[in-house]
Amino acid sequence: SNQGLKDYYQSYFNIGVAVSPQTIKGEQGALLLKEFNSITPENAMKMQPIHPREDVYNWADADALVNFAHDNRLKIRGHTLCWHEQVPAWIFKNSSGGRVDKALLLKRLKDHIKTVVGRYKGKVYAWDVVNEVIGDEDDQYLRPSLWNEICGEEFIARAFEYAHEADPDALLFYNDYNSERPVKRAKIYKMLKKLVDNKVPIHGVGLQGHWSVFEPDDTELRESLKLYASLGLQIQITELDLSIYPWEKNLRAKKPDEQDRFTAALEKKQIDRYTRIFSIFRSFKKEISSVTFWNLSDRSTWLDQYPVPGRKNYPLLFDQNLQRKKAYWSVVDFRK
Ligand code: G3I
Image 1 (cartoon, rainbow, N blue to C red):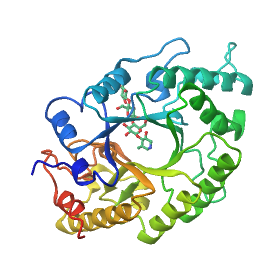
Image 2 (cartoon, rainbow, N blue to C red; image 1 turned 135 degrees about the horizontal axis):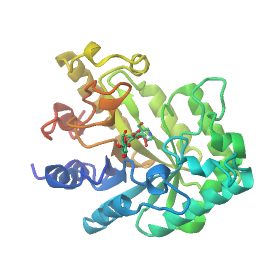
Image 3 (cartoon, protein in one colour; image 1 turned 90 degrees about the vertical axis):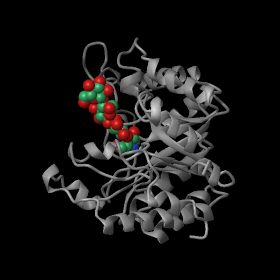
Image 4 (cartoon, rainbow, N blue to C red; image 1 turned 45 degrees about the horizontal axis):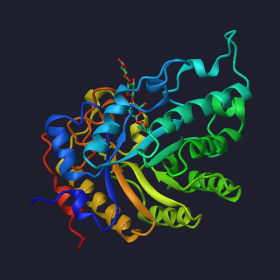
């Protein structure tokens, strides 16, 4: 059929994909344009690649993606302005090589955000402003990081304010993973509520959706969507994929030779899981404005490198030959 995912879902939400400057070319670029109407730079706008030294910005990759989106009338989400990973070492050091103080760190964060958001003002329609700051351990509120150690919780609100000053029309998101799990969800909710109550310019919450054929729990997902929406925030699914390995097992790193195969049984589970989560997404049509996959096809996904390089994974809707998988057809069959 001539329709792509974006067409089937036209009256529901945008359908996006995380890309690099390589994946927008050739046959992958063609698939992207047929199926998706939104992109997220997978790495190109992160602080380390785009701002490796205080006085150096590398715009080439990010510009290429922004121009591609513009030329092809795709939406583009910016990712990400403040994160504990992929952050250049210089930002935490003062001129004598010691640790920066809070005032200088916030000034650098402000300069960074104003420069990057300012450059793409009116082009990038939504930003993951703050990424993954909630702790994974049950007794941790915020994740331990230099941002938190040096600034305390304040850097979170400041980041949103700087982004809003740089582009008052951009939609500003908090983005995190495992955000449907009850303990972490309660902490995310607590932080978001503070921001909303303090009139910080935040417009949405991103549920990453790095799930597996065994997760998430349907009820937890529905309850989470309701809870976040109750704050008056819009919701986007920002980094969807369904690993064929369960997450807890995944984290106990395995050697590539211990890998499972993408068996018929796992394939069936994946079809079933994709069908159920998309049916849930459709039932939250008013609350969810975009669903983005984290990579294009099973030919190459970040999960091939995680948690150990060389363990092949098959988490997406297109196979290694860029063909639609059975899960694809199930996701576009709205009777399911
Ligand atoms: O660009 C360098 C290259 O110059 C260098 O030679 C090479 C050697 O390792 O590394 C390249 O950078 C890698 C980069 O991906 C681009 O391929 C980094 O090492 C690698 O750590 C990085 O991984 C990315 C990861 O975030 C960390 O930034 C993944 O591609 C990306 O899919 C992943 O995405 C994150 C989201 O941003 C946030 N949520 C979780 C998600 C999955 O981890």
